[in-house]
Length: 71
Image 1 (cartoon, rainbow, N blue to C red):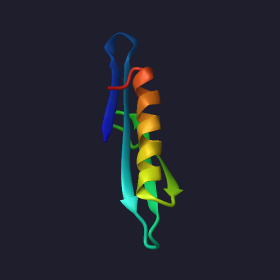
Image 2 (image 1 turned 30 degrees about the vertical axis):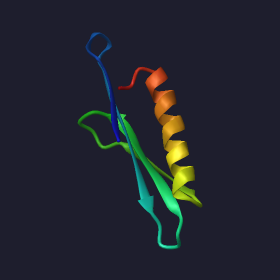
Image 3 (image 1 turned 90 degrees about the vertical axis):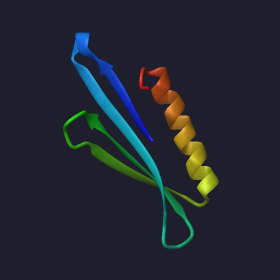
């Protein structure tokens, strides 16, 4: 899932990317990357016991980012 925040008047061009990946031991990770468009971003990996927990976390983050202007 890719989200962007672009505001040309303030020179803001940000991206936020999230992906759920299965682990080797039945767990799931939520991989997040964010930064300026056109530049390599920062990456964070959070681990969850179930896919449903990872999806819930992704949805919560998506809603918070939408409130901050990401589309």
